[in-house]
Each structure stands twice: as structure tokens, then as C-alpha cells.
Amino acid sequence: MTDTVAWDWETREKRIPVGDWNSRFEWVEEPYASPDGERIAAIVNSDEGEFNVCVNGQSWETPFEKIWHLRFTADGRLTALVSDMGEWTVAVDGTLWENRFGYVWNPLFSRDGRSIAVSYQSDRQYGMALNDVPWEKTYANLTDPVLSPDGNHTAGSVQVISAGEAEIHKFQQGTISAAMDGVLWDRIFVNVWNNAISLKGDLAAEVRLTLYDYTIAVNGVPWEKTFGGVWEPVFHPVNGKVLAPVRVKGKWHLAQDGELIWKSPYVQLWHLLFSPDGKSLAAIVATGFGKWTVAVDDRAWNCLFSDFVTDLTFSPDSRKIAAVVKDNERWGLAVQGSAWKNTFDMVWKPVFSPDGAHVAAKVERVGKFTIALNDRLWPHDCEAAWDPWFSPDGTRLLFRTIENGVYFRRVIPVSEFGG
Image 1: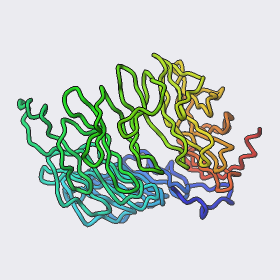
Image 2: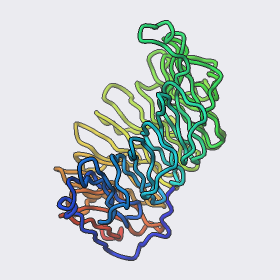
Image 3: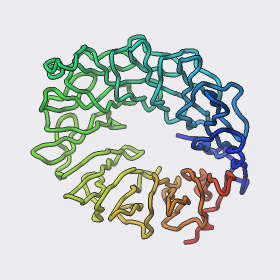
Image 4: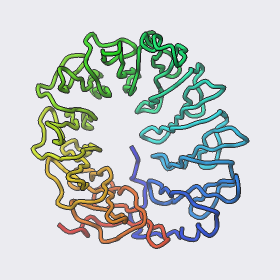
């Protein structure tokens, strides 16, 4: 979680010119704003084979051969993947990790931003590195990398048996397992997908036992029952049990430790999400073809959406839930089973106020971006915008936008939206 208490919630507006960056550099890539809104940064090209990062108009001291995946962590550090002397590593506020790799990708960040993990390749072997500490053991392949919620563990699906393209029998027998912190499970599977790490350091994943049998494995031990399909597992935040959507006789059910626990079957059921207090479980479900909605504790909303539902979000007090929805080719937001009247070309993940009374989201219409609060639009059309933040007391909003070549950091009272 990002700590917003120390942020500046009093200054109404701050400005940083960014339009002149295009004339200062050969080209400027997509900008990123820090969570607190105090910094705006972008990867820039200053010469052939020379890249840098520009932050509030100032470049990092050292340029690099190539830079990509610029991101701020939750605690406000600016990170990027950089190539230095033909080797790749991670840069944090311009300072490089000590370790170098043949390639790095897919950076992962802990919720508090203190831990950074990447997947890497060195000498045709693959592994993960956490806070500049690489795995001691590497593998022939690595997919589905994951970082634990507390930022202390990494895991991924790894290939442990070599197989040529024509050796189909090896793939059918199994060549894949999972490794946490580089330590391999004892069992090998046909496939391993979507790893999840618990707060206690247990590892669960979707596994394929044969060409036709799927289940969930926890610390390398599969559930006793198999299914026609499974989706990504989650750990119960209170009791540590493992839950996952499973397919039985053409319908999707919710299972816990291999046993069905929700009574209702669904045409689709996935993207499980526990409330912050751990007492409620939500999922995106389909009750029929083109009938998407949200189910909370096995009770589906009455409103249905024809195209899509995504980005489930619980309020901090666990009493409300919102989701991004798409119906008849238009994007919107639904809160507690009721859809907003306004629709958009695109909607981003909703954000609740600390008390759950308000919900806001970044939205797009006709190529311009703005912020919507409680189904009311902020009357500014912006070239770029980022997700809004609520103040700790829920009375103000932090908006980060670019308008006419200027980056704005604004603190807007919720009361200005009316209603």
C-alpha cells in the first residue's frame, strides 16, 4: 500500500512544463507520473544509441545504450531496465544494480514498493533476481514469474527436462515444474501456470497432470481431484486455504482445497478477489453467453454486461465493490451492482475513498482523458492523465494530468463535484 499521509494535500496546483522536451531531445517516449504527483518522467533519446531518463526536466547523470519499462514504485522510486556495455540490469533513480544479465524483463514490485524483482537470462539459462540478488540455480526456461505480496519471495514456472521440438513424448510426460526463490518443487508436470505465493510463503499454481487432467498444486502437491480446466488460484488471507475456479461437466465452479464450495455453476468464473478484511470473496462470472457480471459470496449481481467485466476493486472498508464493464461496445463503471449512466471509450481501474463513500476513475472520450467521480465528469480534457488518489480523510482528490504541454498536479476538493 502507498502511504499518502505525508503527501502535499494543501497546495492547489503545481505545474511542470513538458512540451519543450520534444525540441530538446530526438524523441520522447510515454511519460510517467510519480504516485505523489511531484515528478513527471520519460525515456528520451538524445543521440544515436544514447538514451536517458528526463525527470522534471532534468536528465539522469548517466546515459545508456537502451532503456525501457520506466515505472515508479509505490514508494516513489523511479525504475527502468537499462542496457550498459551490452549487458542489462535495473536502474533505480539512476543507480544501477551491481549484477548484470544477458537480458532482463517483466519487473515486479511489492505493494509497498520496497522490493523489485525481474526475470533474467544469462548464458541461455533463466531465473529471477530480487533486490539485486539472483537465484542460485537457473533453468532452461522460465514463465509466469510472481513476487509475493510482502516482497520477500519470487517464483516461476521452469523447464527442468530438455526436449527437442520433435520429442512430443517428453512434453506429454512432463517437463515443467515450479521454483520458489530458485528452489525446485519435487514433482514435474505437463504444464504449470499462474503461480501464487501466500503471506506464509506457500506456493500454489495451476497444473496439468496429463493432456486432459487439470488441478491445483500447493508446494508441489496436487489436489486429489482433477478437473476439465482450472483458473488461477488464490490464498485465503485469513486461513491460508487455496481457492480456484474449476471446470466440471462444462460449467465453472469455485473450489477450495479441491472441494466445490459455491453452489452456483457458471458459464465462466475467474479473477477471484478477497475483500481487505478477508470476509468476502468476489469473482467475475458469466451466467450465459454475453451475460457478464460480478458475484460476491456466490450471489451474482442482477445487472448484466454483453462484452466484458474486469478490474474488480473492493473499497478499503470491504463494504463495496466496483468493476470496469463493457456493454454494447461502450465502457463504463458498475458499483454495487449498479452501472453508471455515463459511458466512455475506455475506463481504468476504479479507486475508492478510504471510507468507501466515493469512487473515481480515469476515463477516455474521443481521444482525451479526464477523471470521473461518482458518475460526474471533471470538466477538463487532457492529453494524458493518471489514476486519481484520495486524501487520507477522503475529502480531496489528487489529479495528475498533461494539458497543452504542461504537467499539472492538482488537489481538488471532492465537494467541487457536487452531489
